Length: 413
Image (cartoon, rainbow, N blue to C red; front, side):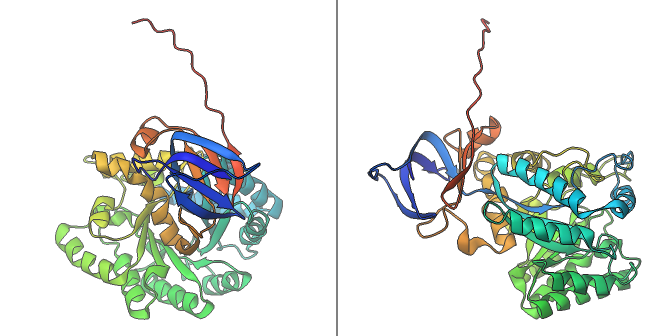
């Protein structure tokens, strides 16, 4: 396959990209096509690494309204509703909904996904189902699974045992939810437990951390200290951290020194964080998102996830990272031209870094030929105009090909 005359990651000059045996083999200003080689004319088009969704819940996807709608819009009512729905889970139920969501994600250029899976279930039904899904989609999508204790580790019966069993079943990362534990002491103990478990089982760590407006929710400092002192560093991810939006600046200044030393990753989920955040405020209402701009300026890796697709925490969602990105830029005041132009990194390379897949991700000679071609010449235009994903290519094979819509505009003004 030869991609001709394409703008690679906003470069002004175009290049040709040659793919053989599922890898990028040559990137140069001009490459001649071989006999019978498939050639894609990408003149005035944009080539990016594939979109990454590093934070989603495929076990709960497509369950919004079942058994009831979350009318309050709070995190806590979402957990309550899900605790009822998960009693009826079956392997087929989870697999059907998860694959439907993944198919939608793939259509929108996503090829790398990290899904949190609730393991506060004595049968671990959702986890067993998604382990099957991970195997079944592996040739088209790289799916990571996080053992996620939705109702707590210390605060749920046999929580530690369930987490250990989940690790042994073959998850990719160990998760937690310290702000939902009964006490501050439980929160700290849960973090110590999960990091130790990850070390023992050679897993990554991705914690739902301080997903609350409460400025006294400060589990992040404990998680970052563990990442630093254990040497796990960038194998650790803090998701949400929305309480940081409520921290005072003096405390935050001190905290950022630790965050930079620890090398942990951050994942914000702008759509869902904005929906759930500020629900207990009158006015002024908090935005509900962590300090993305400040994290970026500090050189800390931060990515965006979609988080929820039609479930008890978010009634919308369509597997499209451009939606999460668009919201995040607005809420985070990341609206400078350069911010927007380079914002694709928040849903591509930064997410790949958090997932620890950068060794086989990116448009470089010798790496797997995973990429998308967008119907525009740079990302500022592509995001602003919601340009189509013309091609999604995975290991040199076309996963998705889109024909641009044709619009006849008879406006005569």
